[in-house]
Image 1 (tube, rainbow, N blue to C red):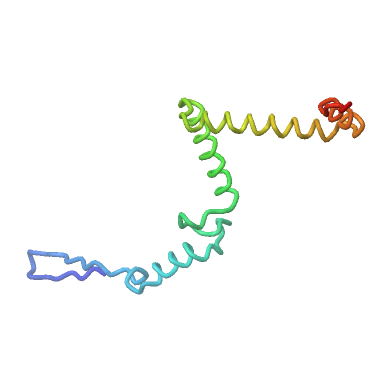
Image 2 (image 1 turned 180 degrees about the horizontal axis):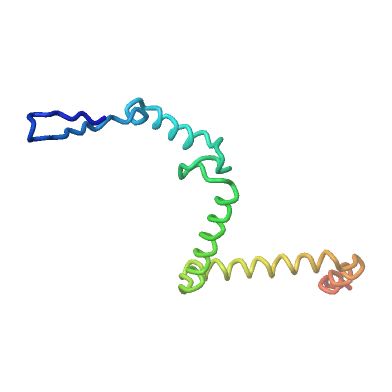
Length: 123
């Protein structure tokens, strides 16, 4: 570690040699880091520390937060012409579907009676 070199009786100089860290130089530490990042079998309990390797709960919560943020932004901006037309078309389709269901729920004798009213009676 410390190797004192004596140049003379009156002058003392100490040369300190920096030792190389054996863990860093061997690559063992980098192998441990890579193992922790990819494997995830460590005491933290997560599946790894890489961005693509988030725990499922964290990914779901993050996705939910992004969806809520997107919905808030869409609610603040006015609807486009296309969105308005699509909404009108959807409402018309729902009305037509509702009328069909109402006609199907009517008893058959009422439908026949309605049809007979429109048929001209021949003399």
